Amino acid sequence: MNEPDAIKKLQQRIERLWGIAGIGTPAIRLQTSPIGDATPHVEIHQEKFDIVIEERGIEIHRRAGLNIEDAAYRYLFQMAQNHALKTELRERNPRPGATITCSGSADDGYSRWNWMALTISTLNKISPEFGARAGKYYSEILNHSPLKEYEHHNAKWPL
Image 1: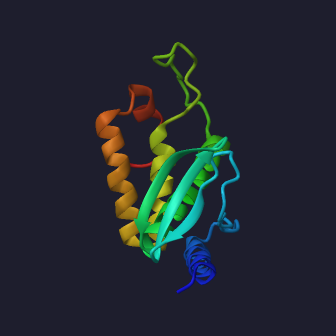
Image 2 (image 1 turned 120 degrees about the vertical axis):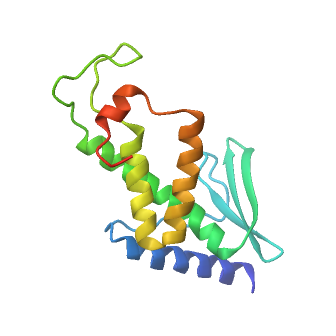
C-alpha cells in the first residue's frame, strides 16, 4: 500500500471509530508533515505508522512502527481525552463545604479522575479493548501519583 492510501485508510478508520463514540464533534484531520507547534503528524515507514511530535523544528517524540489499529488508538485516545478535559472543565462545580487544597487554593471541584474516567468511558464505547488500555494507562499514572484527598472527594465517577 502506498503512503497516501495508508494515510487515507488510517483517517477513515479514525473517523469510523470516532463516530461510534457519539460525541458529535468531527474526528481529527491527520497531519502528514510537521507544523512546528507539537501537533502530531503521521509518517509511513516500511508499511508501519510513526506518530511524530515536533516543536519549533525539533523532534520531541516519535512513536514508531505502529500498525493501523495502534495508530488509530493513539489518535482516538487523544481525542477522547481532549473531549473529557473540556467536559470536566465545563461541568466542574465546587461541592458544598469546599476546603483548601494542598496548593493552598480553594477547592473548585477538580479531580483528575473525572476526566480520566470519561476518557475511559468514551474509548470503551468505541472498543472494550481501547477502554481497557486507557484504564491500564491511567492506573499506572495513579499508582505513581495518587489522587489527593480533595480529588477523591470531588470524583463524580466510581473509583
